Length: 241
Image 1 (cartoon, rainbow, N blue to C red):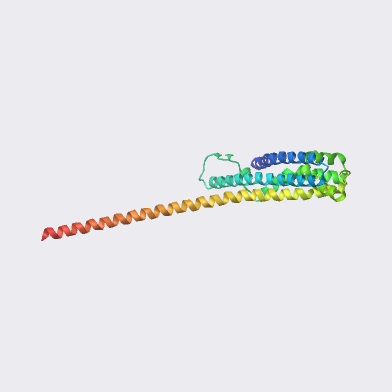
Image 2 (image 1 turned 60 degrees about the horizontal axis):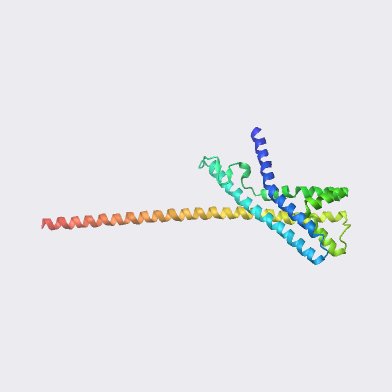
């Protein structure tokens, strides 16, 4: 029971650790979007919002790619330890823990951990029609709020008085961001997986070349022995004559 609780605890710590950086990045992108919404030129505002949201998604993808690569390295280390090959507690990625290993579902889970606050704020603001929750959404999670308000502003020509039902469309940027997180995590894991396969193939080629070289050396030695034996035989026959 203690081991199970410890494992769950370390899993939670890993998710919190992984979500911290992208959450801060998203916060910065959202605050920048808040400033952009003050621009009165609709076309410029739309272009900047789209670019900022794209940058938010790209940042999440790049971060999750690095996370997936690191997690797969930890999985390789774990597999080696379970096979009894490695006995060290430390790895190139820090101290080994099972919670750091790659799992296919972790891209989605980490992404959801990053998005849990905007999801909660959308639900509270839309269902309870809470002005406070909507204001917090704009300041803390603007990356999931301002893209739809920008579209609404362009469609209606109104830059204020956004209806509460508009908040439900916040799940669209959240879904796009989650897709980038999942794709980035798997991209990093596949990169490390391919690297491991290439290393194994390289090791196999080196071993094959080594065996072939040893075979050639052994063949040359055999030929040298046969040559020496023929010379001795010829010398012996000449001496008898």
